[in-house]
Length: 156
Image 1 (cartoon, helix red, strand yellow):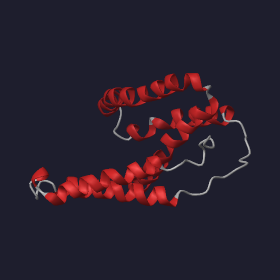
Image 2 (cartoon, helix red, strand yellow):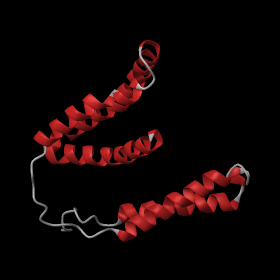
Image 3 (tube, helix red, strand yellow):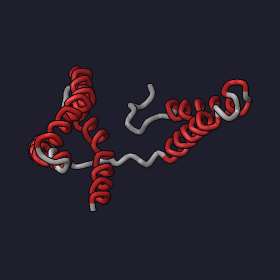
């Protein structure tokens, strides 16, 4: 049961960052985007430092099970804030899926991963294969970045 709940928590947290960033972009004026991203980035630093202290306190004074229950009040409060803060907007235009971007980006990251994985065995940059994997892996995301986004304004 614990592993299932950890899996579901990890799956749900994978959606958290894109949803939070889209919430920032949709609900803040563009001149405040940098401040919004900076405040959001503080989340990582604060959560890593505060969580270790809280978890130690829970284990010393209560039980290790409290580590898993500490997020419940915050999650309830956050869901209420999101429910109130997100305006119901109808999606008028759904962009087509970027299949080329997904394939090119995924292939590029897989090639870079293969280079990093096999680099030690093949003597890193003294191997032509590692150079080829790094070069082609770096070129694939470049093609993704050059592609025109469906959200981009039309070219003049």
